[in-house]
Length: 401
Image (cartoon, rainbow, N blue to C red; front, side):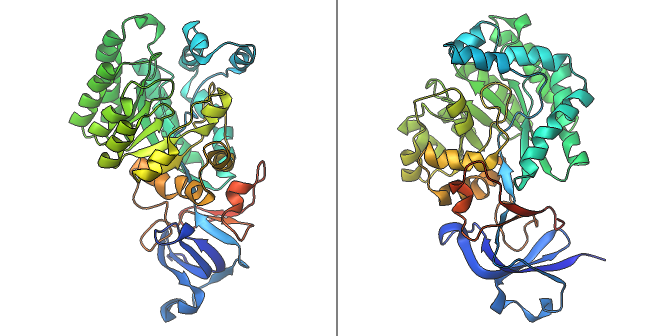
């Protein structure tokens, strides 16, 4: 029998356009199987649903399940020592150039088995799920050789076999230049990164392709080679861009119709305009901004001016953002980046889905998946307002909670 259920007496943040949060007071959501079939005010509920089983939520808030659209949850080891180094005065660039940073995680990840990677990632995934997250993007990028990159992606795919969560995988071979190619990024891209990307695609392990366009990583020209190959096989792209400097990465990504450009602290108005024309989402990552004690803010006012959708994500990673709370990220988006609570809510639902190219979640609407979060609050702004408090009452994934 297909499951049928009505969620009633709830305040519903549909996140549909038209009014803040798309809020419906005293509303109902009708679910059949994994899908939403109707949403609206309870008094308007169609007659054919009135004898269906129902749960009464006592005016609690229901939102779309949260989406963490930029993470690196699969990795080996940790970088607590580097955290201490930075607090003693070392910059992110100095740590990286001394052989730390991403490359220290590469060493630990290369020595880990697929089972090790999955086991180590699950506590991080569980922390996100416990806060109402129903979809997580997971990147590779700590292998920097074909064998380990594929191992990371296989481990990422397995998460949704052992946890009730949707996983979108991203190939991030162009994350850093591995030690065996030191000083020769061109050769690494041609001989290792691009062949690994093709094999990941052939094995069905990858949903999108990413890169790190930065002074300590890859040049726009090197990233272009990756994007050209990704475009040939029809993989969507995204890019770590303008985090530490402005190399024009966001404009480059937009020229390929990128799903998102991420970080963006040093982005200028020309880059914002290019993103607006391409429909590219601005993926803002306040966890890295906070951890690295940055002072250059992403151009939120320009994103508003050009109507560029803003998303927020944890950037969960072992070095620059060891963060597994999307609720805290919402608060950071407001307190650090001066986003409004309504913008922050859209940033982890509707706009996060756009940043992953997902059309069936992020908004509560007929035809979408019944991926929902029920909160012990009545006002959506409470989710951004509190710090270190989790008001999740119930999480519903594919109609089941």
